[in-house]
Image: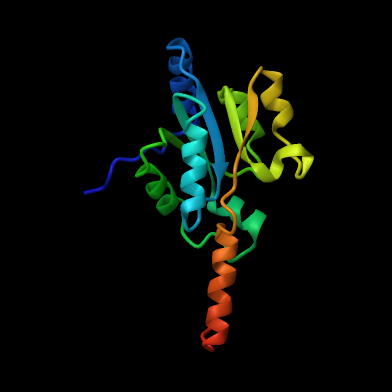
Length: 169
């Protein structure tokens, strides 16, 4: 039996967004690859959900992830990553997108809050979609990072251990 999925098309989400707006619900958006889901992801998703009533997660597609992170990523395909996110109680809906950043989807869905990791705060890293969010009156909020927890650091640790054991990484 296939577990229930929270994966939605952009058109479905746009209709849901209108309904949520009519109900006065605060809609929050965050996005990422969510490859090898770890404690940092869970804390960020909980933190994002705390900003509102509904949490939409934009999931980078397999093609988009390869374009951004290289040919060996993602480790899990987008359907598996969406299924994992669907199992999390704080996630209300998921949409997969191909673009390198979510400006077009944000312009259409107009979430009240757009969450980014704190590494984007204070201009440390550019937020191309910030102008779109602010143009419709949305807010950009920053989520604390869990130090040392990232898929990249997990992969580096695994590869270092594999090299030490003379296993192919």
